[in-house]
Length: 482
Image 1 (cartoon, rainbow, N blue to C red):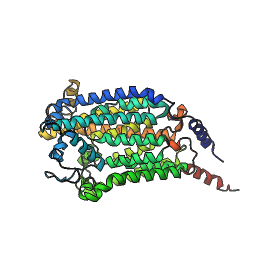
Image 2: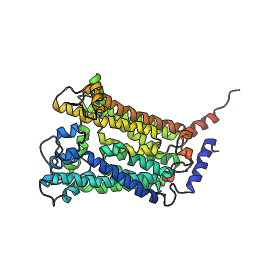
Image 3: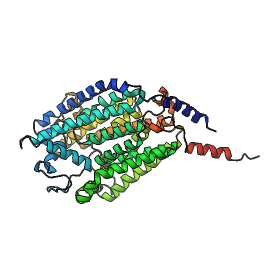
């Protein structure tokens, strides 16, 4: 017989199963508002980069004004300006010999390179940046609308949290991450619409654009196992594998060395800016600072331990966690011990954070942490490139209050504080999500009468496998001593 908590979950689920996660036409009514606001934020993000664009992204300008982008320099450094094809043509000048991104991102870069061919030679670099920014802005709109669609009753709030976030404004055009973000958001939206095969296909494309969406298979599989949704899980996995292979196989067959560049580069990469290891290596961390194999082992091992804890949480929580909650947690578990944490990686977390916990206070604190780190990294690189000691904390605060960049950048100690500000705010947000899972009555989504608006076939489904039920069954079978 079902426990009282399970009957309550099933009752709440049956209510939501009989009505759509989003009332008919609601997203259509919200779409113009969300589209317009996202476009406005993306325009402001483009304007924020203009002091650097006018100087053709001179490195001193980009660090001083915090308007760096990979897009413009990589057009030249990765051979696109010379007509080289990603993965098929190599280039010289660094330890990287082919485009070091998964194939869909490389294809995106090549598409824009073709689009700017009509421009003159001197104008193509800026045209490549501007056209890329325009397409990324469209992808940002797609990500916001897909996130709002999957958010159920709180579609307006969730969509606005993503659309109006400072992180989107500041980091949208640093790299091509919004391609994977939009495809991942579409995959979640398709899953919420109970179309697992389509969700898998979109997720496969997202993985072909960036590695991190592969992590989302874990939460989806765990929740399907707990709910006994074997058929949906199979269709999801089949769709993911098929589209990933479809996107990758031609390049794997005809340009193997170029295709594997992303994977070998990721494996051999050392400690980079933003990683917690960057701080730890200055405080006595032995070995991994110089030994890449040990660094990979430490980072991967820590992630696996955290992932195992998330798996136990998924199967033992008093009520099955919502999909967005687990997806957010597994991504945080991957990022916290990673050896690389670039500023634009905040975009990966943004839609999931808004769906996992659509409350403003902690979200705003997290965004402040990201803002602190965003300016911290560029001003630290300013001191590194200029070989200056950089401003201390009081000097940095004084410059910021004067609405100016610290002359000569910031010191490493101040940069470490900025890094820890981001690290701790992300960690705190993850702890709050775990707390909501352990106390589902405090989950703002479920307290509003919904079960899991992004859950698709999981929404309102009964538990089939649950560690909590198993422990309860064992307790009832233990004989009472006379």
